[in-house]
Image 1: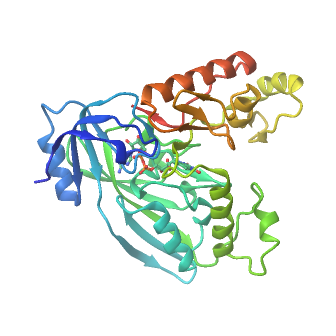
Image 2: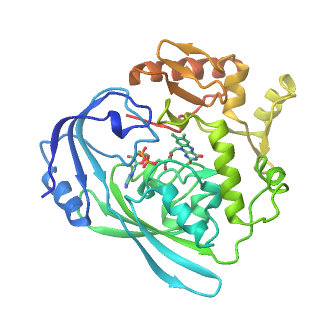
Length: 337
Ligand SMILES: Cc1cc2nc3c(=O)[nH]c(=O)nc-3n(C[C@H](O)[C@H](O)[C@H](O)COP(=O)(O)OP(=O)(O)OC[C@H]3O[C@@H](n4cnc5c(N)ncnc54)[C@H](O)[C@@H]3O)c2cc1C
């Protein structure tokens, strides 16, 4: 039976480094332990929340319920052909360790998602993405435990309803399933995705153009651009990049012709939230212990002892300014608890 701890500090379980507490906390190292914890906590423990590495969560307050920390390890080769390989990875594996393993073995597809913090179990939740690639591009199945019934269900890729930083697990099934494992299909003859950001430009400087080089370039760019949560608390991009219709886009563009944008379809355009936040004058600003990162305005940071409420209040001020200047309501990418 897993040990349920009481009044437990979450400081080392969230990359914002917020010193919030949870009423109850349980770490589970196997499916059986998870099933026992779920059954045991059916009544009397309050709401339940799953936490991996806490790199996409802001604890605004103490948590008045049970935090379940699934820490199941392992990966299994399911199928191999001359051109591809299928690997099932347990939820508690570190994401970047898995990406490194794939790259070292020349299994391509995930290299653009290098150096993203977190556990494998959280990857399908917001369909993590970076540098023109999303996790869904390689996911074929997700295995999950139903918190109410204790049954294990395998979701096909279609059933996961993946979208931009979105999936069914962030909506209808939020807090209803614990992701146990994810199955990825990777290519043994990978083609490179280099048309995003400055990857192609950097690649031109390397004699070997392969997934190892792409991983190296991306890690270098990320280390240069993003704050290291071990040094300064943060959860990566705080807001999603808004997607607007063309009429709205053109209205804004008329006033801000220097605005960067990505055409997604004839009718939809994505605008970088970081650019709008910067235009509102927030880049590098600090209020008390909370601030906006000086190299990337989309990232909110904890300069030391910020409370979750301080970070949240700052985010709301930013949101209000962006709404006032651009008429767009930013949506949080980070899960506010
Ligand atoms: C410096 C930095 C850079 C980042 N860059 C990127 C990036 O480029 N692209 C990107 O997409 N994200 C990025 N992120 C966000 C974050 O790393 C990812 O969202 C990551 O997948 C979160 O993993 P986690 O284990 O920390 O999840 P957590 O933060 O613990 O949880 C995130 C959400 O998933 C749920 N959850 C977690 N595990 C499970 C499970 N096993 N079953 C069910 N629900 C679960 C939680 O309840 C919560 O709602 C970045 C974060 C940081 C700090």
